Image 1 (cartoon, rainbow, N blue to C red):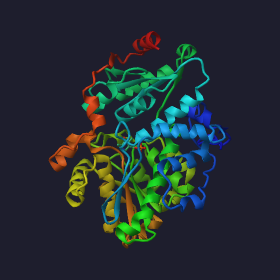
Image 2 (spheres, rainbow, N blue to C red):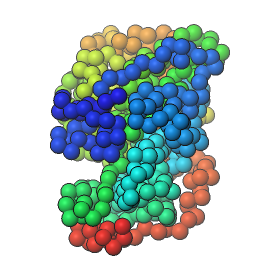
Image 3 (cartoon, rainbow, N blue to C red):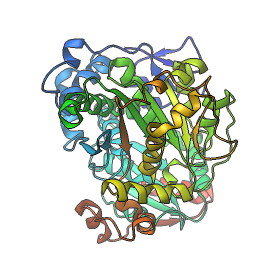
Length: 473
Ligand SMILES: *Cc1c(COP(=O)(O)O)cnc(C)c1O
């Protein structure tokens, strides 16, 4: 398999190059598979459904086997995924795909752990260590730190803005030891990002150290996220008949989205043959993509702070991949856009809890609101010609832009699979506001709370950062 660049049409690179470079250094474009292979029908129709690891192996073989042999791939997968992505039915037409069972309790563990081990594999014959620099505004840093923790030949430096992330998030970042360090920067997230970017372009530093990034645009984070779409959709199809007396449902995946990496992985899974009819892109007030689906205009904008802060992205980087895979019209046939404000998010956490007993986090809650609105008539209203008033939250679109699956969403044969991207305990305060109690904190999060803080203070000045790197690496 070769990987192409979203900007330069002539570029073709190996998986190794795509992973180790992260993005095309000349064009600034992102890598996507040249073609998307199809899983054989005999695999997709197996009963019982293949295990999560079997699916992970089958899929990664199609994308990577020429470069990493199957037995090595299986070792990587086994090491990455001591956890899976269970599905939980919460009402007769809704399943939650729980993606928070990894060590940092967010879905980013699926991608980051795979990327870390693949990078370690490609780095195995290098005499010098590879240094990863990562700036974070929250979840990414802990997922990356935890993913690389203890991985030989690689170390990680995480930069985060002082006082700008939640106390629990800070604990998750600042308590690593060994090959993962963190710097608490007196500045904003943008300052952190600038320090990292300046280091990458500093040739005197690059002569001394092998530096790399680990951000969410890396193809090695995207591919493994397709595993759980395939797994979840096959499992739901398998048990739907027993749970709900529905045969062959139309399955809609509802994806809380920020940078749109997760949704892009879903699109890849569908192209490979996962039985998914369509998608709802659920965002907070950072609604660049729902607006694009609605009127075809892409308007990147500064991000707005919300309660679902892991989705506070005004210029989603994976948009570039989506338009490299689909034109506007095909995207509209497949994806519905939805957005919600903070008041609606709190209400949605409460409504999900009141009606189903399920405690959902603020990101998943937007997914729940989107799905509940779609199945209870908003799709039908769009098809009948009604529009969501300009600037008002809700499903976006019109008769012309409603996806093809909208008609199916009116009957009872449509099932929603909501991707729950984080454990609610990571956002305890917001959840408490909605349902008047804190979610139970899982052991793996509680443990972190008692570890000593090891982060070092850092100014936003590049020379200080460079000095520190030269002394420490
Ligand atoms: C990162 C994140 C998202 C957004 O995922 P994208 O792939 O960037 O769209 C959603 N929810 C949570 C909890 C996250 O950490």
